[in-house]
Length: 471
Image 1 (cartoon, one colour):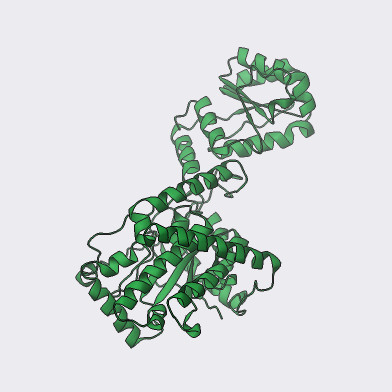
Image 2 (tube, rainbow, N blue to C red):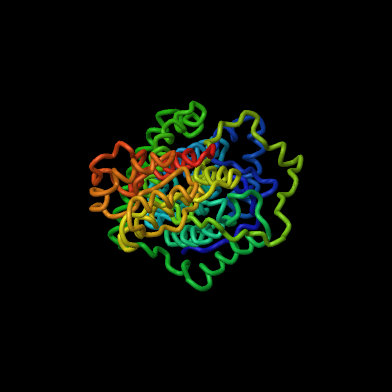
C-alpha cells in the first residue's frame, strides 16, 4: 500500500540532499562511487544503516535526472534499471546477499502533469525492477521496489509560480495513483531559486491534502484493471527494458554517462518535446499559452531556506572522480527570456487591423493577443472600421511598427492583400496575419502568419524583432 512522506528539507538543487552521514549514491555513477577510493566507507555505512534500521534505504537510484534532462519515460526507466544493476553488482561483490542489497536501494522517478503516463511509468518500473532483481537471484519477497516519486522541476514556471501549484497537485496525485511509496512535492518557487517558508508550507499542505482529504494512498493500485493504464504500463515496461539493454551494451549507467552516449540519446527527445510545446501539441499553461501579463508576485516576506553547511564527515564521502551529470532543462525558460526582454524594453502595444464587425474578428484578435502575450507584448484594443482607409488611419495614430490583420477567411480573400499593402505604405515595419495564408489572394505584403500550429516561440521572437526589442 502506498503512503505519503513529506520531505524534511527543500532546496533549489536538482536533487534532494541525502541523509547526513549516509552515502547519497545517485544514479550518477553508482558503481564509480562505490568502487572509487573511499567506496569501502560508503558500503560500510550502507551496511551499518541496514543493520541499525533494516527499513532504511541507504542508497538512492535517482533516475528522475533523466526526466529533468527532458528524456523520455522509457529512458528514465531504462536508466533506473541500469543504475540499479550497477548498485546491486557493487554491493553483492562487497559481501551483501542479493536480498540485502535489494533492501538497501530505493528508486526515485519524476512525477509529471501527464497524469496517465506518470501512472504507467511508475507501475512499469515495478514490473521491470522485479525482473532485474530476479536475475540477481533475489527471492520473490525481495523483488519489490521502494519507489520515491518527486514532482518534476522541468515543468515549473518562474514568472508565474502560482501556476506551479496546479502542476504540483496534479503530478503529486499521479505519483500516488501510480503506486509511489514516498512522495516529494517541490516548492512552487523552485524555478526562482531558494524557497521561502510559504512555498514550503504549500508543498507540505499538498501532501496533507493528498493523504487526508483525497485518500489517494488508501488503494494499493488505483489504476489496476484500467485498459488504458494496463496497456501503457506494459508498453513502457517493454520500451524501458530495451533502453536498459542498450545502456548495458554501452558499459552500464556510468559508462553511458561518461561517454556522453546517454546525453546524445536524450538530445532528440528534448528537441522533440520543446518543438511540441512551441507548436501547441503540448502546453505549458501560463507560459506557452494563456500567459498572465500581470501575475501576482509571490513574496511572503519569509526568510529564504538555506541548506545547512556540509560537514567534514560528509565531504570525505565525495567521489574522487565524479561522472558527468545530465544537463537539466526548464521548459519555460526560453519563453520567460522573451518576457524579460520585453520588460526591459517596454515597447508599446501592437496594432490589431480588424476587418468587419466585432463578431467577425474577435476570435482571431483574442488569439493574436494570447500569442503575443507569450512574449510579454500587449495589443491595442481592436476596433471595427468602416473602410480600409479608416483602419490605416488608426494604425498611423497607434505608432506601432507591427500590425496584425484579423478577420474571417472570406474577408481575407477580399481585403487582406490590399490592407497589408496599405499598412506597409503607411509605415508598418511588419504586417502579420492571424490565420493561414491560404485564404489570401496575394500574400506578398504579409510578412508572417500566426495560427494554432505556428511556432509560438518563433512567433514571439519575430514579434519582438518587429517591435524593435532585442530578444
